Structures are given as structure tokens and as C-alpha cells.
Image 1: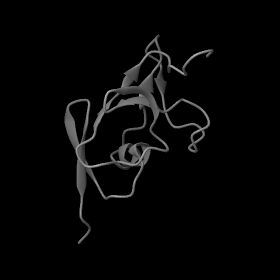
Image 2: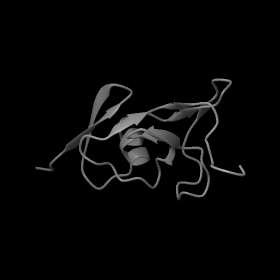
Image 3: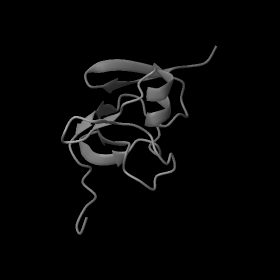
Image 4: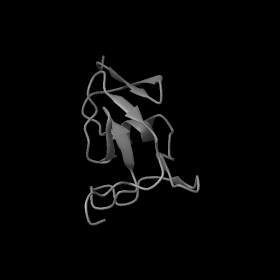
Length: 91
């Protein structure tokens, strides 16, 4: 039997096997739109390797974390990000 871990997504509990990225866990649950632009357009995984910021989410209070390269951890808190990804100074 595969052990499962759980994390929070927008206040709901998501369970997944360990070793997945946040994006992988969300896709496994059927959640394809993982961010919204400031005009509410849905965005999803694009590059899948951490180059772009289309999968930016707020993870454990940190905005604009790329979900495609962030491993899921037990108890982490993930929030759908609305608006542009904050790419830092000079973006």
C-alpha cells in the first residue's frame, strides 16, 4: 500500500503519494488551472521545468513559487495565485 501525504489547497485537503511536485499532485487531482491572471484568465503548467512562471502559486505564504519544481510536503499550504506572478526586482 502506498503511503499518502496531505496538504491544503485553497482550504481543502489534497492527498497524494510522496515524491510529486505541487503541479503533479494538482494534475493528479484533475486540477488543470493553477493560477489566474489579473483578468481572471486561467493559467496552467507550460514549461514544466521551472523556466516560466505560468504555474506560480503561493506556497506556505511565499508568493510566486513555481509549482512545477516544488516538491509536496506534508502539511504545506498552497493557495491559487490571482494576478501576475511577482518575478522579483526588475521584472
